[in-house]
Image 1 (cartoon, rainbow, N blue to C red):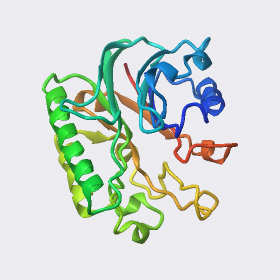
Image 2 (cartoon, rainbow, N blue to C red):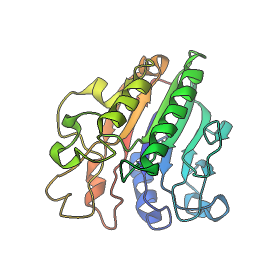
Image 3 (cartoon, helix red, strand yellow):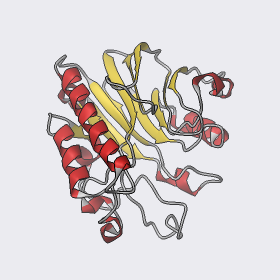
Length: 257
């Protein structure tokens, strides 16, 4: 089962590029972030003929998450427990040779920090930690895939000094991320490689892409049962150099499921 996460940065603006990538990469499941579309305006028609079932948790002009699956979707849940006006979480079960719970997320950016946006980020992460705990109790394969807006370590940035005061890399942000991972999750990419230069985002500004001034903020965290099924992982970096790209690129895993 090939599962990918991709912050598309506007589904309507990147529709053609997304369809091209889907045809090339052929993922079974895709978690999309920043669709920037309400549920009723999501362009389902662009996926006609590709064989994907689609579940969305949208919001006008901002945020928004979706799951696309060629294996169907069961028990779809939108939003973390608790009140939240922002569309940032969606989960569903996908059944291949075995069932896998897929959680797609778009974690708050948190800037400027300190401030109410940063407080919201940390509070949201605590709500996520609670939900992760609940899902782990079932002792089943679970994948938490999305744009976490967290640079876990300095090795995950080409120029870590540029991010010292940013909400993506503040000590409190990294500590909150570790509290989630330390529940028993596996960072899929770091399970495959400890090498530097594994970036998933390059800003549109200041020539970040040609200079490879990137950061790693798109992660797939796996429950122990999902980690046992991990066969392969990839970052489709070349997508960033195409016409009208997102500032993120797809990250994918292959599970024996």
